[in-house]
Length: 288
Image 1 (cartoon, rainbow, N blue to C red):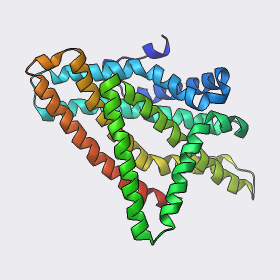
Image 2 (cartoon, rainbow, N blue to C red; image 1 turned 180 degrees about the vertical axis):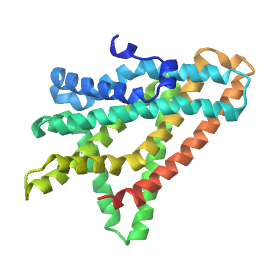
Image 3 (tube, rainbow, N blue to C red; image 1 turned 90 degrees about the vertical axis):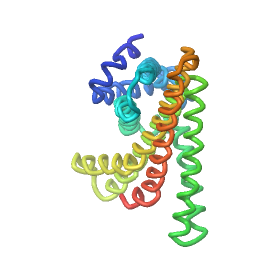
């Protein structure tokens, strides 16, 4: 009850920046508990623990946003209000990602091996498919092929976010936490690889860390934050409908307003997803 009681929806929307600290704490504690209690399965257990800690905040925020939909206000105003909730979710995601990244960097390689095992396997599978794609034809055609594949995969995740949020109310938060752990693993692997190259010639200094760590964060946050924003937007849409159904708001005239608002959020999430896929294929590889 301690972690989940640190903040509520109203306070979070007033001070969204604090969510970075909250998310960081969730990830660090979740990783440590996962290793301590379920060492061999810690890569997945830590994700579940962070998800459990985030559920009260996410649920109260979605419920708070659904209550705004019941008010007689313009759609433009509603989207602006939902922007506050999305800011909270993004800040929480950034904090969780940084927490996992911090643990990846400070733990010894032997411990990282099982603490982020599932995430590393996922990244390896993604990279293998990318290598196959780029080896088939030239840059433009292979880039387009990768773009289509990434976009199709991201659309699949988007649909899961909507479905999970509608059926479980908070199902999307697990997908968000999992993606945060995968991105953190990718950043950590990149940073350690670059530091290993430096160590081949001389011992890495603080200056080297200050150079490599921000580069690792920048490399994966450019498309990662936009992609996760799309998932959160879709998850918020599904969550708002879910809460409305649970509260039997579909018996009211304002349920139509909720459907329109959720549809706008879904359209926005699709646009963000296309932008994220473009950044991942054509911009992120340029950062080395």
